[in-house]
Length: 361
Image (cartoon, rainbow, N blue to C red):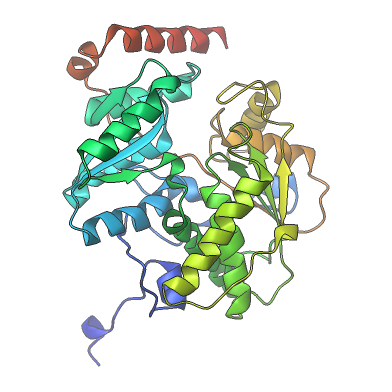
Protein backbone atom coordinates (compact mmCIF):
# COMPACT_ATOMS: atom_id res chain seq x y z
CA UNK A 1 0.00 0.00 0.00
CA UNK A 2 1.19 3.51 -0.81
CA UNK A 3 2.27 5.22 2.42
CA UNK A 4 0.07 8.20 1.55
CA UNK A 5 -2.97 5.87 1.65
CA UNK A 6 -2.25 4.45 5.12
CA UNK A 7 -4.88 5.91 7.50
CA UNK A 8 -3.48 7.86 10.41
CA UNK A 9 -4.50 6.76 13.92
CA UNK A 10 -7.41 8.73 15.33
CA UNK A 11 -6.21 11.68 17.46
CA UNK A 12 -8.73 10.81 20.17
CA UNK A 13 -7.49 7.90 22.29
CA UNK A 14 -11.05 6.76 23.09
CA UNK A 15 -11.76 6.23 19.40
CA UNK A 16 -8.37 4.62 18.85
CA UNK A 17 -9.23 2.05 21.50
CA UNK A 18 -12.90 1.64 20.55
CA UNK A 19 -13.33 2.90 16.96
CA UNK A 20 -16.96 1.78 16.73
CA UNK A 21 -18.13 4.08 19.52
CA UNK A 22 -20.43 6.92 18.49
CA UNK A 23 -18.67 9.91 20.06
CA UNK A 24 -18.63 13.32 18.34
CA UNK A 25 -15.17 14.83 18.23
CA UNK A 26 -13.22 17.71 16.73
CA UNK A 27 -9.48 18.05 17.09
CA UNK A 28 -8.32 21.13 18.99
CA UNK A 29 -5.21 19.81 20.72
CA UNK A 30 -2.02 17.99 19.81
CA UNK A 31 -1.94 14.54 21.40
CA UNK A 32 -0.62 12.72 23.20
CA UNK A 33 0.50 15.42 25.59
CA UNK A 34 4.00 14.73 26.86
CA UNK A 35 5.02 12.96 30.03
CA UNK A 36 8.00 14.71 31.64
CA UNK A 37 10.03 13.50 34.60
CA UNK A 38 10.70 15.99 37.42
CA UNK A 39 13.36 14.09 39.38
CA UNK A 40 14.09 17.02 41.70
CA UNK A 41 10.78 16.21 43.39
CA UNK A 42 11.39 12.46 43.46
CA UNK A 43 9.41 9.99 41.38
CA UNK A 44 7.22 12.77 39.96
CA UNK A 45 6.01 13.00 36.38
CA UNK A 46 4.14 15.81 34.65
CA UNK A 47 1.24 15.31 32.25
CA UNK A 48 1.75 18.36 30.04
CA UNK A 49 -1.90 19.24 29.38
CA UNK A 50 -0.75 22.86 29.53
CA UNK A 51 0.99 22.34 26.17
CA UNK A 52 -1.93 20.64 24.41
CA UNK A 53 -2.31 23.54 21.95
CA UNK A 54 -0.21 26.45 20.72
CA UNK A 55 -3.44 28.48 20.49
CA UNK A 56 -4.63 27.77 24.03
CA UNK A 57 -4.11 24.55 25.92
CA UNK A 58 -4.98 23.22 29.35
CA UNK A 59 -7.43 20.59 30.43
CA UNK A 60 -10.52 22.40 29.06
CA UNK A 61 -9.50 21.55 25.50
CA UNK A 62 -10.39 17.86 25.82
CA UNK A 63 -13.83 18.80 27.14
CA UNK A 64 -14.49 21.18 24.27
CA UNK A 65 -13.43 18.61 21.65
CA UNK A 66 -16.43 16.38 22.36
CA UNK A 67 -18.90 19.16 23.13
CA UNK A 68 -18.06 21.23 20.04
CA UNK A 69 -18.11 18.03 18.00
CA UNK A 70 -21.64 17.51 19.27
CA UNK A 71 -22.62 21.11 18.42
CA UNK A 72 -21.34 20.74 14.86
CA UNK A 73 -23.03 17.36 14.45
CA UNK A 74 -26.30 19.08 15.38
CA UNK A 75 -25.68 21.85 12.88
CA UNK A 76 -25.19 24.49 15.56
CA UNK A 77 -22.78 27.35 15.01
CA UNK A 78 -23.53 29.65 17.95
CA UNK A 79 -22.11 28.23 21.18
CA UNK A 80 -22.45 29.78 24.63
CA UNK A 81 -20.51 28.87 27.73
CA UNK A 82 -20.63 30.02 31.33
CA UNK A 83 -17.90 30.77 33.82
CA UNK A 84 -16.26 33.24 36.13
CA UNK A 85 -14.54 36.36 34.79
CA UNK A 86 -11.25 34.45 34.52
CA UNK A 87 -12.78 31.31 32.99
CA UNK A 88 -10.28 29.11 31.15
CA UNK A 89 -13.10 27.36 29.34
CA UNK A 90 -14.61 30.60 28.05
CA UNK A 91 -11.24 31.76 26.78
CA UNK A 92 -10.49 28.38 25.20
CA UNK A 93 -13.85 28.47 23.42
CA UNK A 94 -13.30 32.03 22.17
CA UNK A 95 -9.81 31.30 20.83
CA UNK A 96 -10.51 27.91 19.23
CA UNK A 97 -13.95 28.51 17.73
CA UNK A 98 -12.61 30.49 14.76
CA UNK A 99 -10.88 27.41 13.31
CA UNK A 100 -14.25 25.62 13.36
CA UNK A 101 -16.14 28.57 11.83
CA UNK A 102 -18.27 28.80 14.95
CA UNK A 103 -19.68 31.83 16.77
CA UNK A 104 -18.64 31.62 20.44
CA UNK A 105 -20.04 33.67 23.31
CA UNK A 106 -19.74 33.59 27.08
CA UNK A 107 -21.76 34.63 30.11
CA UNK A 108 -19.34 35.54 32.89
CA UNK A 109 -19.95 36.22 36.57
CA UNK A 110 -17.68 37.99 39.08
CA UNK A 111 -14.85 36.34 40.98
CA UNK A 112 -11.96 37.58 43.08
CA UNK A 113 -9.83 40.02 41.08
CA UNK A 114 -6.52 38.23 40.54
CA UNK A 115 -3.80 38.80 37.92
CA UNK A 116 -4.45 35.41 36.28
CA UNK A 117 -8.19 36.02 36.04
CA UNK A 118 -7.64 39.54 34.68
CA UNK A 119 -5.30 38.24 31.99
CA UNK A 120 -7.97 35.75 30.88
CA UNK A 121 -10.76 38.31 30.97
CA UNK A 122 -8.83 40.85 28.91
CA UNK A 123 -8.13 38.19 26.27
CA UNK A 124 -11.75 37.02 26.26
CA UNK A 125 -13.11 40.55 25.86
CA UNK A 126 -10.47 41.40 23.24
CA UNK A 127 -11.15 38.44 20.98
CA UNK A 128 -14.75 37.36 21.53
CA UNK A 129 -18.22 38.17 22.72
CA UNK A 130 -18.94 38.09 26.44
CA UNK A 131 -21.78 39.22 28.66
CA UNK A 132 -20.35 40.18 32.05
CA UNK A 133 -22.75 40.07 34.98
CA UNK A 134 -22.51 42.24 38.06
CA UNK A 135 -23.44 39.37 40.37
CA UNK A 136 -23.55 35.59 40.23
CA UNK A 137 -27.05 35.88 41.72
CA UNK A 138 -28.38 37.04 38.35
CA UNK A 139 -26.88 34.12 36.45
CA UNK A 140 -29.72 31.54 36.79
CA UNK A 141 -32.28 33.93 35.32
CA UNK A 142 -29.93 34.99 32.54
CA UNK A 143 -29.09 31.40 31.65
CA UNK A 144 -32.78 30.46 31.66
CA UNK A 145 -33.55 33.32 29.26
CA UNK A 146 -30.80 32.10 26.91
CA UNK A 147 -32.28 28.61 26.87
CA UNK A 148 -35.79 29.97 26.31
CA UNK A 149 -34.97 32.60 23.70
CA UNK A 150 -32.25 30.73 21.80
CA UNK A 151 -33.33 27.06 21.75
CA UNK A 152 -31.26 26.32 18.64
CA UNK A 153 -28.02 27.57 20.16
CA UNK A 154 -25.64 25.25 22.00
CA UNK A 155 -25.15 25.87 25.72
CA UNK A 156 -22.11 24.53 27.58
CA UNK A 157 -22.45 24.30 31.34
CA UNK A 158 -19.70 25.47 33.75
CA UNK A 159 -16.56 23.45 33.06
CA UNK A 160 -18.46 21.33 30.55
CA UNK A 161 -19.29 19.05 33.47
CA UNK A 162 -21.64 16.70 31.65
CA UNK A 163 -20.99 13.07 30.64
CA UNK A 164 -20.20 13.94 27.02
CA UNK A 165 -17.66 16.55 28.14
CA UNK A 166 -16.09 14.09 30.58
CA UNK A 167 -15.63 11.57 27.75
CA UNK A 168 -12.81 13.83 26.55
CA UNK A 169 -10.95 12.93 29.73
CA UNK A 170 -11.87 9.26 29.39
CA UNK A 171 -9.69 9.58 26.31
CA UNK A 172 -6.94 11.13 28.46
CA UNK A 173 -6.95 8.07 30.74
CA UNK A 174 -6.60 5.76 27.75
CA UNK A 175 -3.80 7.99 26.49
CA UNK A 176 -1.96 7.48 29.80
CA UNK A 177 -2.35 3.71 29.37
CA UNK A 178 -0.80 3.94 25.90
CA UNK A 179 2.11 6.04 27.17
CA UNK A 180 2.82 3.76 30.11
CA UNK A 181 2.64 0.78 27.77
CA UNK A 182 5.28 2.44 25.56
CA UNK A 183 7.52 3.07 28.55
CA UNK A 184 7.10 6.86 28.63
CA UNK A 185 6.71 6.59 32.40
CA UNK A 186 6.19 3.82 34.95
CA UNK A 187 2.60 2.97 35.89
CA UNK A 188 1.43 5.84 38.12
CA UNK A 189 0.50 4.97 41.68
CA UNK A 190 -0.97 8.45 42.17
CA UNK A 191 -2.55 11.02 39.86
CA UNK A 192 -2.74 14.54 41.31
CA UNK A 193 -4.89 17.32 39.88
CA UNK A 194 -6.90 20.38 40.81
CA UNK A 195 -10.65 19.84 40.79
CA UNK A 196 -12.94 22.71 39.83
CA UNK A 197 -15.97 21.58 37.82
CA UNK A 198 -15.26 17.83 38.44
CA UNK A 199 -15.17 17.05 34.68
CA UNK A 200 -11.51 16.01 34.41
CA UNK A 201 -11.55 13.94 37.61
CA UNK A 202 -14.81 12.19 36.70
CA UNK A 203 -13.48 11.42 33.22
CA UNK A 204 -10.26 9.94 34.60
CA UNK A 205 -12.20 7.75 37.04
CA UNK A 206 -14.39 6.44 34.22
CA UNK A 207 -11.48 6.23 31.79
CA UNK A 208 -9.23 4.13 34.00
CA UNK A 209 -12.18 1.83 34.73
CA UNK A 210 -12.68 1.50 30.96
CA UNK A 211 -8.97 0.89 30.34
CA UNK A 212 -9.10 -1.84 32.98
CA UNK A 213 -12.17 -3.38 31.34
CA UNK A 214 -10.59 -3.58 27.86
CA UNK A 215 -7.29 -4.84 29.32
CA UNK A 216 -5.40 -1.67 28.43
CA UNK A 217 -4.52 -1.09 32.12
CA UNK A 218 -2.91 -4.31 33.50
CA UNK A 219 -1.15 -2.48 36.34
CA UNK A 220 -2.34 -1.68 39.85
CA UNK A 221 -5.03 0.98 39.96
CA UNK A 222 -3.82 4.47 40.88
CA UNK A 223 -5.26 6.74 43.53
CA UNK A 224 -6.66 9.93 42.02
CA UNK A 225 -5.94 12.85 44.35
CA UNK A 226 -8.45 15.61 43.57
CA UNK A 227 -7.44 18.92 45.18
CA UNK A 228 -10.44 21.17 45.73
CA UNK A 229 -10.28 24.67 44.19
CA UNK A 230 -14.04 25.36 44.03
CA UNK A 231 -16.39 25.20 47.01
CA UNK A 232 -18.69 22.52 48.34
CA UNK A 233 -21.09 21.21 47.09
CA UNK A 234 -19.68 21.63 43.56
CA UNK A 235 -16.65 19.54 44.45
CA UNK A 236 -18.25 17.28 47.02
CA UNK A 237 -17.31 13.62 46.80
CA UNK A 238 -20.92 12.79 45.97
CA UNK A 239 -20.97 15.20 43.01
CA UNK A 240 -17.68 13.87 41.64
CA UNK A 241 -18.85 10.27 41.78
CA UNK A 242 -22.25 11.23 40.37
CA UNK A 243 -20.66 12.63 37.21
CA UNK A 244 -18.17 9.74 37.02
CA UNK A 245 -21.03 7.20 37.14
CA UNK A 246 -23.05 9.15 34.58
CA UNK A 247 -19.99 9.17 32.33
CA UNK A 248 -19.56 5.44 32.83
CA UNK A 249 -23.19 4.94 31.71
CA UNK A 250 -22.51 7.09 28.64
CA UNK A 251 -19.85 4.63 27.43
CA UNK A 252 -22.16 1.65 26.73
CA UNK A 253 -24.88 4.04 25.54
CA UNK A 254 -22.48 5.06 22.76
CA UNK A 255 -21.39 1.56 21.83
CA UNK A 256 -18.66 0.78 24.34
CA UNK A 257 -18.53 -1.83 27.11
CA UNK A 258 -20.21 -1.48 30.49
CA UNK A 259 -17.84 -0.21 33.16
CA UNK A 260 -18.10 0.26 36.90
CA UNK A 261 -16.67 3.20 38.84
CA UNK A 262 -14.41 2.31 41.76
CA UNK A 263 -14.92 4.98 44.47
CA UNK A 264 -11.88 3.71 46.38
CA UNK A 265 -9.68 5.26 43.65
CA UNK A 266 -10.77 8.78 44.62
CA UNK A 267 -9.22 10.81 47.41
CA UNK A 268 -10.52 14.36 47.84
CA UNK A 269 -8.22 16.98 49.43
CA UNK A 270 -9.92 20.06 50.86
CA UNK A 271 -7.25 21.75 53.00
CA UNK A 272 -5.62 23.59 50.06
CA UNK A 273 -8.77 25.48 49.05
CA UNK A 274 -8.07 28.51 51.22
CA UNK A 275 -10.76 31.11 51.88
CA UNK A 276 -12.59 30.74 48.58
CA UNK A 277 -12.45 30.26 44.84
CA UNK A 278 -9.45 32.03 43.27
CA UNK A 279 -8.14 33.10 46.69
CA UNK A 280 -4.38 33.04 46.59
CA UNK A 281 -2.83 30.84 49.29
CA UNK A 282 0.65 31.00 50.77
CA UNK A 283 1.17 27.29 50.10
CA UNK A 284 0.15 27.83 46.48
CA UNK A 285 2.61 30.69 46.03
CA UNK A 286 5.39 28.56 47.52
CA UNK A 287 4.53 25.67 45.19
CA UNK A 288 4.51 27.98 42.14
CA UNK A 289 7.92 29.34 43.13
CA UNK A 290 9.29 25.82 43.62
CA UNK A 291 8.11 24.80 40.15
CA UNK A 292 9.59 27.99 38.66
CA UNK A 293 12.99 27.35 40.21
CA UNK A 294 12.95 23.79 38.85
CA UNK A 295 12.10 24.99 35.34
CA UNK A 296 8.71 23.24 35.43
CA UNK A 297 5.56 24.67 33.81
CA UNK A 298 4.10 27.72 35.59
CA UNK A 299 1.37 27.08 38.17
CA UNK A 300 -1.59 29.48 38.21
CA UNK A 301 -2.75 30.52 41.67
CA UNK A 302 -6.40 29.52 41.09
CA UNK A 303 -5.87 25.87 40.14
CA UNK A 304 -2.51 24.20 39.66
CA UNK A 305 -0.68 26.01 42.47
CA UNK A 306 -3.07 24.46 44.97
CA UNK A 307 -2.63 20.95 43.59
CA UNK A 308 1.11 21.67 43.45
CA UNK A 309 1.06 22.47 47.16
CA UNK A 310 -0.57 19.11 47.81
CA UNK A 311 2.09 17.38 45.70
CA UNK A 312 4.88 18.95 47.76
CA UNK A 313 3.22 18.03 51.06
CA UNK A 314 2.76 14.41 49.98
CA UNK A 315 6.21 13.93 48.49
CA UNK A 316 6.66 10.75 50.54
CA UNK A 317 3.75 8.92 48.92
CA UNK A 318 5.17 5.61 47.65
CA UNK A 319 5.28 4.98 43.91
CA UNK A 320 5.33 7.16 40.80
CA UNK A 321 3.22 10.32 40.95
CA UNK A 322 1.64 11.91 37.86
CA UNK A 323 0.87 15.63 38.21
CA UNK A 324 -1.75 17.12 35.89
CA UNK A 325 -0.66 20.50 34.44
CA UNK A 326 -4.09 22.05 33.99
CA UNK A 327 -3.44 25.67 32.95
CA UNK A 328 -2.47 26.60 29.39
CA UNK A 329 1.13 27.70 28.97
CA UNK A 330 0.59 29.05 25.43
CA UNK A 331 1.16 32.80 25.08
CA UNK A 332 -2.08 34.73 24.77
CA UNK A 333 -2.77 36.93 21.75
CA UNK A 334 -2.33 40.67 22.30
CA UNK A 335 -5.13 42.59 23.98
CA UNK A 336 -7.29 44.88 21.85
CA UNK A 337 -7.14 48.32 23.55
CA UNK A 338 -10.08 49.62 21.53
CA UNK A 339 -12.38 46.80 22.64
CA UNK A 340 -11.22 47.04 26.24
CA UNK A 341 -11.89 50.77 26.23
CA UNK A 342 -15.53 50.03 25.48
CA UNK A 343 -16.23 47.58 28.34
CA UNK A 344 -18.63 48.60 31.15
CA UNK A 345 -17.27 50.78 33.95
CA UNK A 346 -17.65 48.04 36.57
CA UNK A 347 -15.40 45.76 34.48
CA UNK A 348 -12.77 48.49 34.21
CA UNK A 349 -12.89 48.87 38.00
CA UNK A 350 -12.52 45.10 38.43
CA UNK A 351 -9.50 45.01 36.09
CA UNK A 352 -7.93 47.93 37.94
CA UNK A 353 -8.48 46.13 41.26
CA UNK A 354 -6.79 43.02 39.83
CA UNK A 355 -3.81 45.16 38.86
CA UNK A 356 -3.65 46.56 42.38
CA UNK A 357 -3.79 43.06 43.83
CA UNK A 358 -0.92 42.04 41.55
CA UNK A 359 1.19 44.92 42.84
CA UNK A 360 0.35 44.04 46.44
CA UNK A 361 1.39 40.42 45.97
